[in-house]
Structure formats: structure tokens, C-alpha cells
Image (tube, rainbow, N blue to C red; front, top):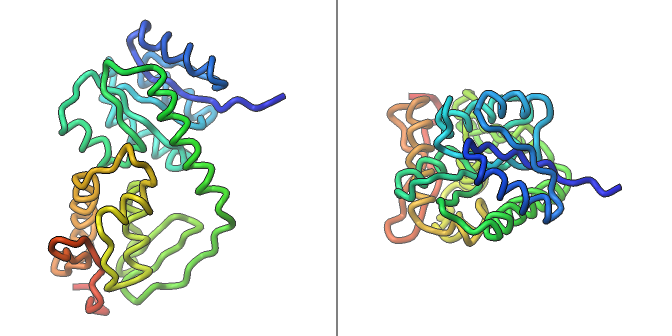
Length: 242
């Protein structure tokens, strides 16, 4: 019997939830509906899904806060997530992407488009997982160390708490210090999704990444901006934390 990918649908409006469940089930998925954040946390903890669809405006908890709590659960960081919102404000989209969400869609939306987004995200996730066994990369330098098996990067010996995309960006930069990556390159290599291709996405993640690095070493600027080109990791970082 063919396994159907389990999709967690976290949406408090029953009409919208019914539509999403119908199109997902019709397309070969196994949707599980949660009307509240509390239900979602319980379902997710019992069995992490293949993907989660989160409504931003839930009755008991903001969708962005729920996203953080789900990611903190065992296996949560590996589960791709897509935000739904009734508001189309750019700030909502930027906040969602900064957190590390895989995609974002505003209401009203086409159910078929939603399913296409879900399929696209799962294809990318499977492709990344199937790329082959990951080897632990030795220390990139005294300043940064990269452990791909744990998806962890240390900065001056301190483990960084990174979102999925912050990790992807920094992983590229630390492996080739001085190499300038354009925004388009970062979008292609880290997001691998034309639907998310706009420069503000990269800039927003670079901003939060810089803030996390500065919290460890306030007087160091590891990520340099190449005006009009993109971003690179500085080659002249001090060997000791400032």
C-alpha cells in the first residue's frame, strides 16, 4: 500500500479547512485538521508530518509563535512549513520568511495553487534528503565550524540558533570566505524555488543572521556587502572573539 504524505492543516475556519483537506486528499495526501494551536502541538508531537500548513490568525496562539514552538519539538526543524494569512501585507510575508518558513500564500487563494506549492516544497525536501549521506565538515576556520550532520554552525565556539534559511546562507558563505554570492545565487542555492525569488527575502535573512552573529561578537562584521553584487564572508576575521 502506497504511503500517503501526512499534511497537518492548522486552520480555525472550518470552511477553508474542509476545502484544503479535500484538495489534498484528492491529490494523494493524508490531511489532518487542527482547529487550534494546542491541537496542532499535540498532533505534531505524536507524529511529525511531512509538511505543515499554518494559519497566521489562530484563536489561541499567533501562527508565527506556533511555528517557533513546532520547530522546537523533536524533529520539528526538519518539517517544511507554509503560512496562510488573511492579510497580504508585505510585513507578514517578510516575518514569515525571516522565521524560516518554506512558503507563504495569502487568502483568498486557489486550492490548486496551494497543492502545487505543497508538492513543490516536498519535492525540494526529498531532493535535499536524497542528495546523499552528509559528512561532518571539519572546522572551516578558527572562527566558524560547520557540522552538516547536525545542521549546526558554531561561531567562536558558540552554537548558533539558526532558521532553515539562515543556516543555508551561512553554510555557503563559510565554506568559501571572500567569495561573493549574488542574491540570485543565494535564492537558487538556498531556496531553490522561483516562487520565493525576490531580493527582499535574502536581505531580510542576512539582517537577522548579522544580528545573531553580532550577539556573539559585537565588534565583528563577518558578512560583508558587495555593493550592487551580493554578500561574502570576510576573510580577515580576528582569530579570537572580541
